[in-house]
Length: 353
Image (cartoon, rainbow, N blue to C red):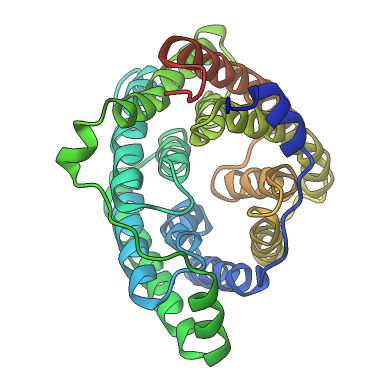
C-alpha cells in the first residue's frame, strides 16, 4: 500500500491536538529550573547574565517522560552541548565581521548537534535549542570576562536543572507516570553506524544547509536578528517526513504571528526585574504544557518568551524586535520548506531523506 501524499497528511495533522498526559509535571519542573537561576543572577545584580542562566537550564526540557537514569543520561548530554553552545556564541561574538561568522558556525553546529541528537536519541530531537543558544549569545555585545561568566553561570544553572530532574523522580506518582509513559529502551546507533547510514547523514545535513541559506539571505538583505531566520529554518526539518515538515512549518508561522501579538502587549508594559523573570517562568510553563500537544499553540507562548529573554539581556526597540521576528520567521520557514521539498523530490517521495 502506498504512503499517503504529504499534503493529505499535512491537512489531517495541522489541527491535531494531543492529550494532556500529565504535561503539568514536566512543565512545572522546567519552569522552576529556569526561574531559580534567573532569581540568582537578579539578586547578584547581573540581570544581563540571564541568557546564560536560562540556556544553561534548557537541559530540563529534554527527556521529560523518561525514567530517572535515562533522563539523567540524556539531560547530561544536553547540558554539555548547551554549555558548549554558549561558549561558542561568546567566542563568535568577539570575532571581526561576526554577523557572517555566526552563519557558518551555526550551520556547522546545527549539523553536529543534529548528529548527536540522533545518536543519543534526544527527545525533543534536533539542534534547535543549541543553535538558539549559540546565535542568541553571539548576537549581543560581549566583554573580556564574558567567556568565564558564561561558563560559570551556565554550568551552575545546568547542574541545578539536572538535580531537579532527578529529585522529581523521588515522588511515587511521578515515577509511576514516567514508567508508564516512557517508551521502551531502544538500541541506539553508534557514531560509526550513524555516519555509515546515508539517510541519517542526509537528514542532519539538511539542518546545516537550511541554516546557511536562511542566515545568508537574512544578513544579505540587512534584516535585523538573522538568527531568528536560522532557527525558523531548523524547526520544520526536525520532522523526517515531508508532511511533518509542512505541518511544523505551518505551525511555526501561525503560532509565531499570534505570539507576536501577545509579545507586543507584554513588551508595552516594559517589564523588568522580578516582573520580567516571573513572565519568563509563566510563559515557559505554558509552552511546556502544549508543546507535545500542538506546536502552534506552544509557539504562542514561546514567541513572547524569547523576546522577553532578549530584552532582559540586551534591551532594544519593541517595534523593530517584533517586525524582525515576523520577517525572519517567514523567511526561515520558506527556506526550510523548500529544502524539505527538494530533498523529498531528490531522495525519494516517501521520505524526505
